[in-house]
Length: 266
Image 1 (spheres, rainbow, N blue to C red):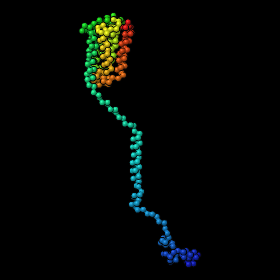
Image 2 (spheres, rainbow, N blue to C red; image 1 turned 30 degrees about the vertical axis):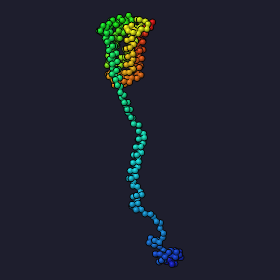
Image 3 (cartoon, one colour; image 1 turned 90 degrees about the vertical axis):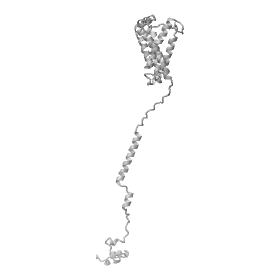
Image 4 (cartoon, rainbow, N blue to C red; image 1 turned 45 degrees about the vertical axis):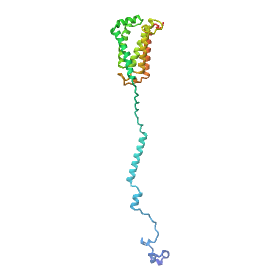
C-alpha cells in the first residue's frame, strides 16, 4: 500500500466523487475541520439571554408562586372548615305600656294593705283585732285541727304576703298564699251559715272580690313599678305564674280538707 493517492484506486475514486471545493480541487483527502466545511451540518438552534429570561421561569419565581398557591389553598380550607359565627340575638323592642304599670301598682298596694292590716290584727291584736290567742280560739271553734300552728302561720303569712304585694317582690307566691287563706275564710263563713249567700257581712262578697284581684295580679305580674320590675315575669308572666297560682288553690283546698273536713255547702 502506498500513500500516494494516485497509486490508490479507492482514494482516486473518492477524489473524483468529491465536489471541486477546497482541498477537493487539490486532490487531497479531507482530514481536518476546514477540509469538512463543504459537508452539510445539522443546524442547532441558539438561544439568546433575552429569550431564556422570558421563556424559562426563574427557580425563585417558581418557589414564590408555589408558596402563594399553598397560602391561598390553606386560607380557603380554613375558611371552609371554620365554625359559623354566632350572632347574638337582638333584644325585642320595648312596647309602650301606658298607664298599665301604674294601675297594677294601685291594685297591689290596695290588696297588700288589706292583707297587712288583717295580719297585724291577728298577730298583734291592734285595730280591734283578736290577737294570736283570739285567732287560735276562732280556729278551734271553726273545727280546725292544729289550731295553734295555724294561728301563727296564718297571721305571719298574711303580714308577709301583704308586704310582698306592696313592694312587688315574689308577687305570684304572695298572691297564691293569700288566695289559700281566702279559700279557707270563705269555707268557714259558708259552713257557719249554709246555703248560697252573697252579700256581706254574711256572704262571701268581700272574699270573692279579693280573690279575683289576687288572681289578676298573679296572671298579669306586678308591673315595672316594683322591686322585681326588671324581671320578665313582672311584665310578661308565663306558665310559671299560672302554675304557682294553681298550687295556691290546691294548698287552700287541701288545708281545708285535711285539717277541717267539713262540707261548706251542706
